[in-house]
Length: 357
Length: 247
Image 1 (cartoon, helix red, strand yellow):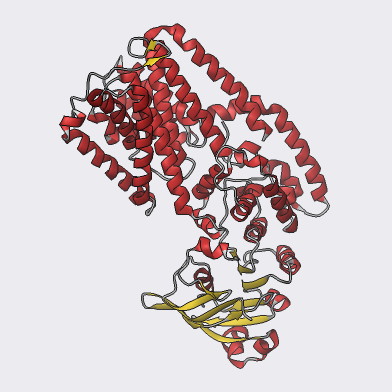
Image 2 (cartoon, helix red, strand yellow):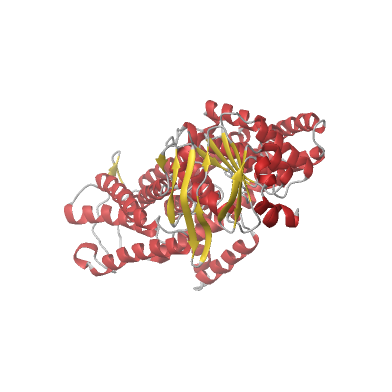
């Protein structure tokens, strides 16, 4: 338990320092970092259902895209401020997730995946055809971003960036708390063994719906921020490509941790930016790296990083737990014969509950 | 007074009838053991009692309430705990967290999203009591997948007990265990509160006769005989199909 916090605080401070330094790199870099943070929110929200609840969804773009459409649509058609629009966008995503979730959670595995994808493609088709409202493939232009304490988010990249950072950190901290809470432990239990969860008295369906709705809400936060950042939306945002990208971000970064998918989002977008400036087949190379991760890095790149750096952070605590384990082994050696293997069998506390950073 | 009663319970998969007109009763505090050769329909019967399988016809009454069509989670909440023949645990979690999840199912706090589970003192208190009871305190912080098979069987019992059931269903608790582990499991079952009724499936005759108040013999989905251990030992039909031939 101590290990988790002692590893989390230096990591979190390092992240904050990076976020504070980013504006020094100029507007181009700031734009990339802002986009990374938005998609990090999106990928982390997807990971709540994929990595923590064990539900493979391929329709997560629906919740991201609907929020973006609501913000831009309300602004362009009705002249409603982006702030109110953002609140409406998050509410719309949450309600949509609760509604779609009610149907999807009735099935499991591949049917669940297909159903989530079908719902999101339904929304995509609507956005494509209902041109008077959505602008179809041309999109909606003319959105006026709101002011942030006197700074206009349309003209000032730093103002946009600050709002996005606040959103990102809120979601990150919320998820860190959630996965360690009683509610989060129920999600993890469902991922690990749904049958047993029911046998010990949990109404599993209800909790799947809760997880799905929370994930939709968080994706909505990402989508609303994307609207404020981009001031533009077209039907592409609802296409299943975006759901697929988010899934790749989750798997690249690693689904076992809260931060992994955020790291995956950074990797994905940096690779996309970097490779596409040299080679138009950037998606091919991302694909190669993705296959490599699936085959050799089951815990993702962030999982690999944590395996090595986690040790540095948690040295003190490991030695404590090792001491405890020794005294236990001593006690145990009087009664059981297999006590010699005890210290090898012991796992680091963080891994034991399935979630670290 | 009966705690659990089944009335003419039937279950078929296509042409295969795994449960045929099974009527049995378990009294409060009774130790009731179900025996029968492989394929007799023992596990299917337990699955029906706890809602994993829906019976084709017949009724199941628990505390005089019809639970035939209820979901597993409702049946557990009413006071029926169970273990599984094949270990059904949270393999990536620690031993203590496995039990704490089950304790939390009973004690509540399900919707707290911002409080750490570490701070749920009453959950952990009950968890460590249960681990003490099944002698797993020493391995509380190990990952379940690192436990020995026998220890995992003990953990199955701890998780079932966390629901504080009135009826405990044990599906072959000693299957695959070494003789030493089997003895430990017998002691564990003996040490459980006398007010707890236990319905147990068991193959090991030593275990059966050392624990049972009542024995029911299942044979191809039907109840062949039911009675005290002495009655079952003396029953000609049982000797013929089950005890005689192979034991």
